[in-house]
View 1 (cartoon, rainbow, N blue to C red):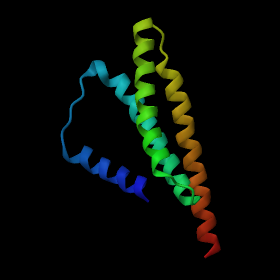
View 2 (cartoon, one colour; view 1 turned 135 degrees about the vertical axis):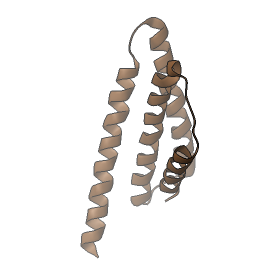
View 3 (spheres, helix red, strand yellow; view 1 turned 120 degrees about the vertical axis):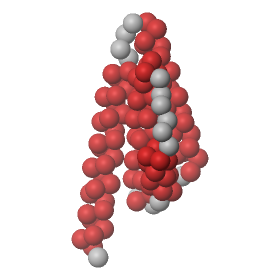
View 4 (cartoon, rainbow, N blue to C red; view 1 turned 60 degrees about the horizontal axis):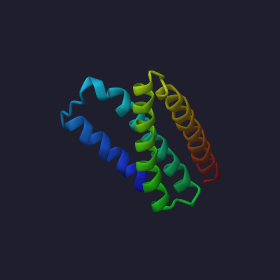
Length: 112
């Protein structure tokens, strides 16, 4: 439940405050945000499975986002679009986690 509340809180803050990110940082931020979303969806999935651990969520949230942004930066400096690998991996994981969350919620709804 904590990750879901954090996601809603983040969406509200993003909608209320006008935060502009310079265009040169947008590839790094987009990959970092995708990595954070992966962590949030993974945490919601773990919460539904009753094995959510805050320390794993926090370390994954910040660790994945920093690593993804750093790899995107490194790839940019080398002239190789490494950020695409992060987009594919994290994007796939977000959809996988969403599918599992959806199935778990449907199974809980059917059992009631």
